[in-house]
Length: 262
Image (cartoon, rainbow, N blue to C red; front, side, top):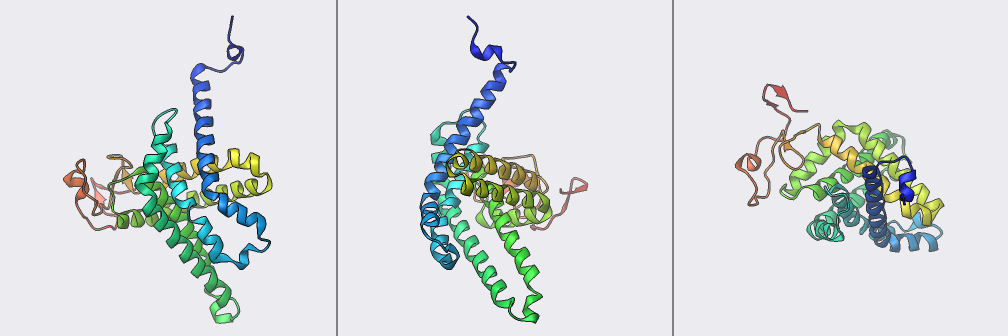
């Protein structure tokens, strides 16, 4: 007797791809929901959350390590990666991911405070567009930093910061697209919490992961995990680190092999 799936005009490998995506989506969404549950509970009980920015910023900190683990899990080259892959990525990156999240939230908070204070006086109001642009750059660069932390483990943190800021500024349309997708996902979750949490977050992070890889492709060459940076950085040496990877060259883009990198 023929299988019910055989009546549908879809190949077997297509079904495997669909179930693989569903498997990853549900697991990633469960992790993100667990990390964001204190924040969502506080948002549901407090009527004016913007009056308590520090409190809600602290509740949002676990989302950074959770998103980093999700990026590593989504980037893993396996149709149905086991849960231990996500656990390994989280154990390896949670400290630097938490530091990145805290620094980003603090910097964005300072910039928003400056915007509110300077907006009351005319000379200071001229700086508002620049401060708003810096806030967007900080958030977009943070996403790229988390992707780099999840997908590489032999770059120093300073190298990750420089690479993320450069790639985000160079491919800013992709960064804006990532922020828009995250904003849409946040709206969906706020309007339909159960259905939104089951579908939107993982899909949005997959788009962010893809866009971040495209951003980084502007400054890397396909030689090792995400390519060898055209401006190489001092990296943390591992048994697999080659002398060429560990070489410290000026971080500014330079000419190599007769063409400009990127």
